[in-house]
Image (tube, rainbow, N blue to C red; front, top):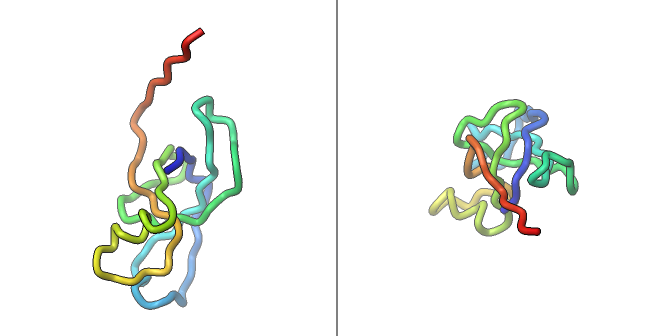
Length: 91
C-alpha cells in the first residue's frame, strides 16, 4: 500500500468485462510530507475519492481481491480516503 494524492481522472468508454461502471483516477504517490515520490498510477475507485484528496492505494493481488469472485484486470485500487495522519519522528 502507499499514500497518494488524486491528481486526475481517466475516462474510457470501452472497458474490459468487469470494469463497467468503475471509476478510474490518476494518483500521484506522496510521502508523509506531501512530497511527490514515484510514478503516477491509474487506480480503480469504488469509494468516491475526489480530486486533491489523499488516498490509500493497494496494488497487485490485494487490489484485485476487493472484487471478490470477479476477475477484474486492475493493478491498483483506492481502499481509503485519508482524513488525517500523524507521524512521529524520533531524534
